[in-house]
Image 1 (cartoon, rainbow, N blue to C red):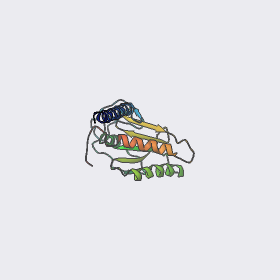
Image 2: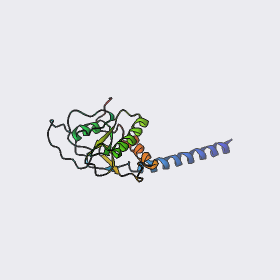
Image 3: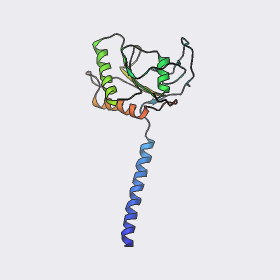
Image 4: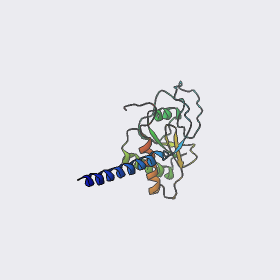
Length: 178
């Protein structure tokens, strides 16, 4: 009987040790996206110029009004979008200077992800001055990329976007119930 308890105890000890090692390794992995400096979260009056440290911005002074979840066809003001980030939104920006077929394809690819994730705090928005085709932003995190295929996002790129959303959604400094 004692031998049986020793074996069971040994197996449990090994399983707990393996679990703790796995947990340590997983918690040591960096979060997806590039972490940028936190520029604060103060409100500014409408019309006040704000300088940000990235394109698109990930933190900083902003307007009191924020942009609600949705798939947008018109660009939105950074100062409203930053407030959304503060509330824990993830923003999927796509390069779009004029409404072209390529622009619509980019929007449609991100809209599919938006629908699949069914997140309340997710925004898809065109960005005229984006220096890549796609960018993901969350509070102080940014991930920019161009698709690896001419037909659009690959499976691994969709997975990359979904992982960014899963990790960063609802992680802004201001917790809201919207």
